[in-house]
Length: 525
Image (cartoon, rainbow, N blue to C red; front, top):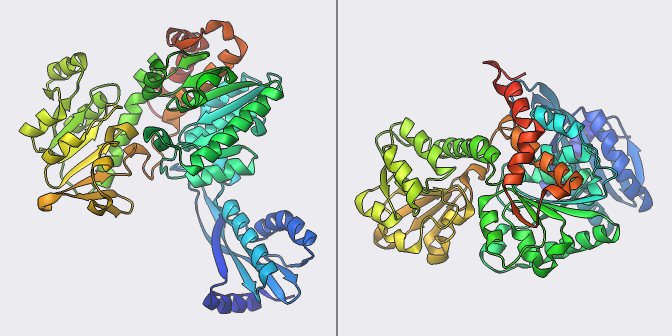
């Protein structure tokens, strides 16, 4: 058997030929090689490969071909979970090398590479423990419920964020078999979306992408059509198995897609106001909709956190810009726009508020902001350095683009806010800036910049709000899930808002939240 020194020589020669892939993973080299072999050994043995192992490498041989996987200690570092108290853990560099390849070994090599990519990008047990530790309320609520005997199938469609990973793991802890959970990403470029998907797949969750951009454009692309077929198959299998199908949705796309077959879903928990607006426009609803989006809990405790995340993300992306004294337009003075306007004013910005509805416009004016009932009217009198869409509807329309000043930055809290911009500019006028957004070049040499990818700026290559800040919201979702399963008589067909507020108040979650985070000044218990 070759020594590690000899393996390193082979690695050097194979790197020159380009037949290798390199990864990094948390753990000790010997332990990782053992875990990798246990998985891949089944495939290679079945395919008549010979396997020879060392402490930190394994060689799969087939005739004159070899595939080597070698592991070597790397510098210890903190896990990817953002915590100032996270311990440093041993890291390992893993390399896979293919020599003397033929068609059979090329296929085996690609399979092993795909496996290692998923294996190394997934969360480690230490990282998962840290994530779980960020949700003390959710852990407590999960411990109070056991859905194992309730015959439940769950479709979950939301951003792939760590707080949602914590929620899905809590559903698993509460007795819902991952086989009966379909987790769907919305397509936003959240920071850890690939790692979350890999980890969920490793636990045998059903995982897919149902991009809300397909709905906004009123056209299903091939990928969306494919995943819709998988969702329909999942629902029909669940019904055939005598299971109730429950939907947790961010945007109300699923009930609208099912159309006249809404009855296949027993009830929905809707998380967003745009989702409630979409549902309200339907001719009829044949199931209960639990309206968490407009609940007192989300209005008072969650929207300020979302605004704060947007504020921090914008400041980070515009790190070398001056803010104090400069004009910022906030288009929409609702649950998210109001705290965002106050934050920009707190750092010395001249904040202008736009809203098409008179009550929020009156509130903004009486709180000392300059106000306008249209963005165009505001742009005719002000030259902002930043415009933030906060309405949850189209905030910046095609009719406004000719008044956007040179060098201005545009961004939004929801996908709909900026949805009209790209429709009115050709691709030749857009230059992508990796990690930042787009530069838009207009006639006469004028340019403006879009922060992010045209969707929620707090989700652009970020993990949005801190896990502990999302603890009460994810706990509320689990409480409503349990109430809808155990006490369905509390909810009527159609949109239920007051009932949601009553269930959350009766659950004791507010007392638990206060006692956990706010009862004493200082660190939470």
